[in-house]
Length: 99
Image (cartoon, rainbow, N blue to C red; front, side, top):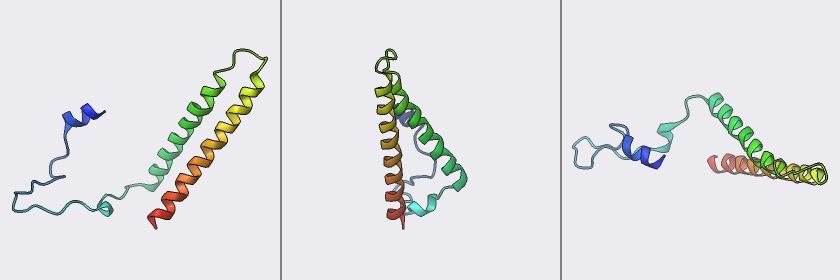
């Protein structure tokens, strides 16, 4: 991704040259608000669902039979709970920091 970003370079006019007479100050964060809050929320839920599949699913893949399968199920439940708590904590942190 880094090599691709270096090859593509920044958008024309995004960062004006300092020696140009019409150079504007650097862009403000508020100039780049999201276009659709619904799509931002949908993307967040899609990523969150993927994290559940990755985090919990990787624990369930460790089962090698039915002998200790229930312990891995409990471990996957703990991982799911940690994933939920961490996502909720990050959401509350961003919500409180943006106010």
